[in-house]
Amino acid sequence: MGTEYAMEPRTLRPEEFDPWWDHVVRAFGGGSAPAEERALDRSLTEFERSMAVWDTDAIVGTAGAFSFRMTVPGGAVVPTAGVTMVSVSATHRRRGVLRSMMRRLLDEAHAKGEPLAALFASEPAIYGRFGFGAATQQLGAEIDTARVGLELPEGTDEVRVRYVSPAEALAECEAVYAALVPGRPGMLSRQPGWERAELLDPESGREGASALQCVLAERGGEVTGFARFRTRMGWGPSGHDGTVTLETLAGLDPATEGALWRFLFGIDLMTTLSVRGRPVDDAWQHQVSDVRRCLLRLRDAGYARLVDVGAALSARTYLAPVDVVFEVEDDFCPWNAGRWRLTGDTKGASCERTEDAADLALSVRELGSAYLGGVSLLSLAAAGRVRELRSGALTEASVAFGSAVAPWLPHGF
Ligand SMILES: CC(=O)SCCNC(=O)CCNC(=O)[C@H](O)C(C)(C)COP(=O)(O)OP(=O)(O)OC[C@H]1O[C@@H](n2cnc3c(N)ncnc32)[C@H](O)[C@@H]1OP(=O)(O)O
Image (cartoon, rainbow, N blue to C red; front, side, top):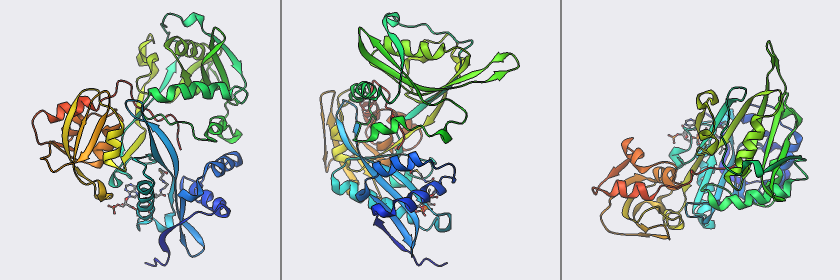
């Protein structure tokens, strides 16, 4: 087998962006590649953190990272490498090209002092070997709005909902988003330029639906929330049969959220509300008259990796007092391997190297799954992936690692 290509990834140069992006598009099935998306991706690409593997003059592997800042339980904002644009040519697959790029990505994140890395996986089986654990889930639903009603909280009637142009209302929507970031683990502080991704609306991506629409929710003249969505008209044998597809919904309080859901449920001629990528603790699930006709579905969403175990575990707070020693296995980033003592509570935490006996043994992947509070250490132990070495330590740590609000990564990257 000829492997005369430079396995060492090389930093991407701006003039190489087009073939690099074309490579990603082809690896993801070669579907539509709208010019607007290419332009947006070019503007967001951090070239010094992006790389390609070359076989003579052709790209055969791509990857990159974004410099994100992620909210962790307790509200701290932690520098996070957002791993992205991973693709390897079908002609060069399974020869270690991804491994070489992941090596460089995680070494660079470590050198930059980023305690965390995160990604959305195209396939769940790929990234566990590199220490990423499934950390957040997302909720989807197909709601039969012709038959399902909503019982809404007090104050909903005081919220006014009005149509606006998505572009013209962007600043108001961004202010709502920014206010929500500290309150939910997994949320990403908006980095410069990323607000434009919210408006990406290429015609080829609409599949017969309308252009992006937007409503603002207001109370007493203040913007308290917004929703972005599309509508697609349909006619069946018994008449109108349209679908509303929700893209984004954000509200600063329960009444605002209720008013936005009521609006989406009530658009004339629409009989289905299609929802995806929502936090798993979305309140509307408890307001509907018939949750079975909402066809709820859960999916793995964000994967997290502790690039620096000590810094990451020190950065979050814990729901209950915790004092445990972890024996951490980390073959890919050996600087994390060994014993760490975590002490903390709702106010703060510290995680330091120790020689003390271990209470729990696990790999960095399980720590990644549990880190944002969405996956319990108890359930990972029941799956055989965490070992309790001191009786009581598992429950203590599992309760402490919880999060009152479900973690959620708000958008793809
Ligand atoms: C964050 C993101 O961007 S997610 C997007 C990922 N990209 C895609 O899905 C596009 C299509 N797929 C591809 O481009 C490639 O198949 C990739 C990137 C998934 C894998 O690249 P490769 O260069 O073939 O991976 P590489 O040879 O380095 O494999 C490393 C290890 O992962 C394993 N692996 C790679 N891909 C997969 C997979 N799809 N499923 C299960 N295991 C996999 C390999 O078997 C190997 O295992 P080992 O450590 O036991 O030896």
